[in-house]
Length: 444
Ligand code: GDP
Image (cartoon, rainbow, N blue to C red):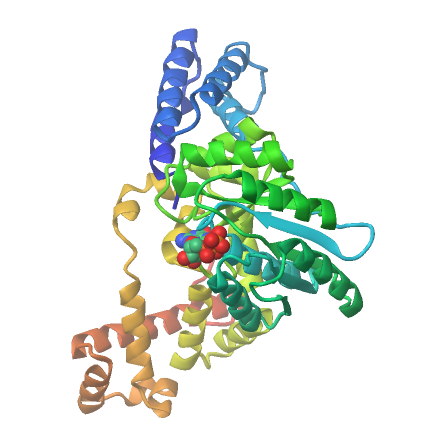
């Protein structure tokens, strides 16, 4: 996850000041010095840092008094609010045009993630907003780009408009909109060509497309891994095209995150989405406040909950709960539950959203061992149907067979069996507790 270095440094700075009942000017000076260094090291633009530190200093010294907070906490509140503001304050929403279709133009350098983001955005619009987008292939210079968009369209089961590599991109965009009107597509997302560097010819072409289709949004797709360069790219595209927002991609990578923190300040255009992986469902709406909270180690519980709501099937969850209550929970159910958690994404990403997770030193370096989960899955998959439902029948020869089938050892199989039986015991106690005091479980 991006921002790790920045987050670590800011959190240790904050720790020093949190508990303080009294914050002196000297304390504020020291803290802002450390915050400044942390931001510069994270590759945040130096002018942006200078302005931010000035504001934090002013506010932290002449602090507004809030009864519920200690002076130390108040200073942190100021830092969080300023970080939030820096990234754009309120989350900005995607445009909806008065008349259909709403047109979105995707622009950016080659390799930034334009085509992938076009697919992700279409997926999000359909899944979350029930929309019916048309994807348009305007990168006629690279046949592979057209093919890539068509493949995404097939994966998503969505229409892709293309006229091959001989047509003019301006004509393609215009015709695509006509088709969208005929076919009742309410969004048109245009994937344009990119170059390795910003150049005149490309800008001319993009300006012509803009004049022809009059887009409701122009999203600049920027690779967060490129650091300060991302800020320069954003500035030039904004000057030439007056973009409406930015999509920062590859925030799942090991970036220092400075770009995310500088782009809004330099271009005054909001970051609307963040790409968090290569898969089509790994695009998140960018919430400045939640991101600031994540960076400061205060967690991002809201995103976590939303993730659970979109990935976990409610019906399945209800059925599982019923099974737990009726004590008919089997290894098959266990497998299903594991699958649901896995769908939410890598465990490490989930952990990074938990408040205070960064502070648990052990956790951070523990490297969540996902291969452990794969082993558990393999063991369960090597059981027969009957064994999954009635683990009591397990004997030495069955265990040996399962260990062999799953590439594990008998003691690993034993461990899982023991864990499962303990889990069932615990469920029994909880069910008894919920039933009232009838059961033999714990009593209050
Ligand atoms: P384009 O040239 O701008 O259209 O870029 P592509 O869409 O072809 O993406 C370039 C590469 O970046 C591909 O390998 C994508 O899978 C990858 N990519 C795009 N977005 C993300 C992201 O958010 N995270 C990661 N890890 N990879 C991404």
